[in-house]
Length: 223
Image (cartoon, rainbow, N blue to C red; front, side, top):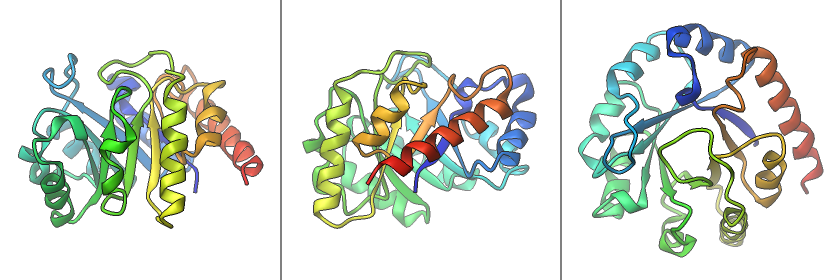
């Protein structure tokens, strides 16, 4: 199933609760939450207090993307504050297999992410152990970047491996998604589409409606 995953990194934090309600009213099921620590990536975003506060008011699936060094230190904390899924970076974990085990043991969905320069081969042996692979299609840490075309082949490679093994592992993409690149990533094999600035435009409801309609149209052309 193809789904839009709006990233609150691009939200207006003065109106965050209001905007989350708009997303829910438009039928959005997955909320993408980027946590950045200023170490693994240069930027600092937000953490557990924000997630805990919005969890009280939302029934959406909280897709928490940890762009942090040694994420295994925080898994239990993020689960307790409301994460439904935790995605960690392969490059940020000293023992990725162990980190995946810890997330699974905590009772939430497991995702693993790779940067644009990280080859698919680095995580291909884990495809049957995770629920989702997140392909970063920009350098992690900043919104509004241009989609890196070389990432299209990585999405295609992942899709081929997943299909060849008969897995239902989902492929998520994050970075540079817009009117032009949406069809590129979907046709390459991605089914979960993270959108930041593309979704959080002046009229959020109309923007989300438009993206969801385009996702539906593109999905009908993919065999």
